[in-house]
Image (cartoon, rainbow, N blue to C red; front, side, top):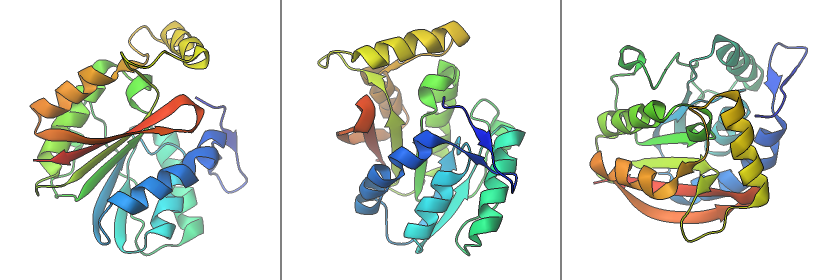
Length: 208
């Protein structure tokens, strides 16, 4: 939810993307396959797509976002990076199955989307993951803030949740266990939960 500032080349820059790219990359490097196809959902400015595809050259990285502005930014970052394994952005919308790719992927990466979208988008994400992660062991990676029954909610996350709901009542921090249960109903098992900077967590699911 950072303010995005336009860059001269037409790309957008998100301070949050710069801050969290390295800790996320460290985790992805440990759990993604050495080669294969990755689909990034709600790729936003495109900074993560460039950072991750550059650091993981064995993976073909396909970013996506329903926002034309975001896709223009992704395209600008992609052109500047000139990486052979970074694909053009898709106009994928978790709420519209007609925009979903038919091809299989080895991993899905979704960073900071679930709390800035209606619950139906998370339902769509899990349906999409079940559809495109066709091999056992396929990875779904989620990053962001969550409500957790056993973890006191940080005051900063409580304020963030209130600000999200003020912008759209359908937004807000999700209950981790509800997300895990939804994933399980789509053949995805939680294999790792790990704390990340700024009161975020990473959740890793595997296709069964």
